[in-house]
Image (cartoon, rainbow over all chains, first blue to last red; front, side):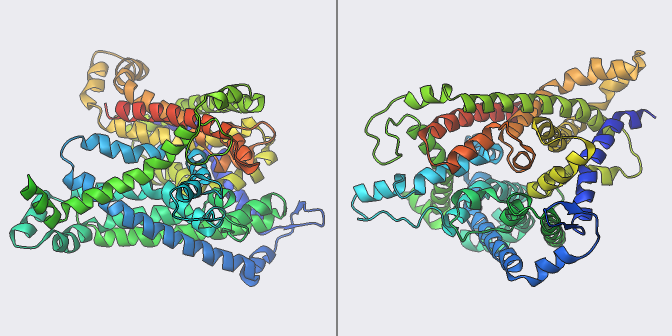
Length: 280
Length: 263
C-alpha cells in the first residue's frame, strides 16, 4: 500500500498535466476550426490532408530534416577530437576539463543564442574586427539572419549533448585494447578507425540522435538568427498556434513531428544496441 | 624535449589536443564576448572597445519591466522546484524501494517531457490547460515547469538512492523506527547534498526554460522571454549586462550542483 502512497501524487500530476494534454492534441489534430478560428468538435482528417498535400509543409519538413542532419554531423565531427582528448590524452585536471563541456549543457539557451547575434551582425564584432585589420572592406551583411547563422547557433547549443555521450563511450573502452593495437604496430590513425571509433559507435549514434531530435523541435534559433526564408517546421507550429490561429492544423503538425522523432529514436536505439559491445 | 614533441606530432596526439582546445574556445569565446561587451560604453558592439563603463548595469537595474521579469522568474522557479521536490523525492524513493507492474512504463513516462520536443509539450499544455480552468498565466507556466522538473528530480535522486547503503535503513528498522522516521532520520540526511544539487539544477533549468514557457505565458514575462523580446526589438547592450549576470549565476549554481550530486 505504501508504495502507492509514495507514487500517487506523481501519477496524478503526470496524468492531469502531461498525459491528458498530449492526448488532447492528438484529438485536436482531428478537429477543425470555424470561420472565426474557434476549434469545433467535428472529426475529420482535413489537417493531415493539408500537411501531406500542400507543398509548404512537407518542403519545410524536409528542410528541417536536412538542417538536423547537418547539425548532427558537424556536432559529431567537432565533438570527436574534444571527447578523445578528454578520455585519452588529458592527464591532469580531467574532471575540470570535462566540467567545461557539462557546464554549457545546462546553460541558458537564450544567452548563448544571443552571443551569436552580437558576433555576426552587420556592425557586429566579427565584421568590425575583420574590417579593422583590413581583411574585408565591406561588412558581410549576409552572416546574421541566415540559414548559416541558424545552423551555427544550433551546432553551438547542441554540441555538449553530442560530446558528452561520445566521451562516455570513449571512457568505456578498455585502454588495453588500444595499447594492444599499438603494440601490434598500428599507428594512432589506424587504431582510431579500427578500434576506438567502432567501439564508440553507440555513443556517437546516441549523441547524433540528440542533435537530430532537438533540431527538429527547435523554433528559437530560426526565430532569432534565421533569415526571412529560414523557416523550420516548429516555426510553422508556433505560427499556427499564434497569428495564423489554426490549432487543429498546428496539432496535426505537432503530432507528425512527434511521430518522426519517435521513429528516429527507435532507429537509433536499434543501431546503438547493434553496435554495443560494452554494457553501461 | 623536442623529441617528445616530434613523437607527439607523429602519433597525432598534438593535433587532437589542438583541435580539442579549438572546440573549447568555440564553446567559451561567445560567452567571453558577452561578458566583455557588457562593459562596453558604446551602444553598438563593435571592435575594438573604445571605453569601458558599467552604465548598462545601472540601466539594467533601473529597467522596471526587466526587473519584474527577473522576480517573476524567481517566483516561478522557486514554486516549481518546491512542488517538484515534494512530489518527486517520495516518488523516486518509491521507485527505488518497490517493484510493481508497469514500473518500467512509468519510468519512461516520467522522462517524456525531456525526451519529447518542448514545442509539442508547450502546445499540448496551451491547448489543454484552459479546458480544466487553468488560465494561461504564470501559474500555468509553473505547472508546466513542475512537469519537466519532475524528470530531473527523479533521475537525480534515483541515482543517489542506488548508491545508498541498504543496511543503514535496515538498521533503523531493527532499532524500532517507523518507515517515516527511518526516511526522515536516516535516508534524508544521507541524500541531503544530492538533494541540494538537484534543487539548484531545477532552479537553473526553470529560470532558463523557453519552449514551454513561450506558450503558457500571458502578459507577465519571465526573464528569458523578456530577453527574447528585447532581442527581437533590436540589440541593446542591456542584454549583455543581464546575460552576464545569468551566465555568472547559473555557472555557480551548476558547478555547485555537479559537485554536490557526486558527493
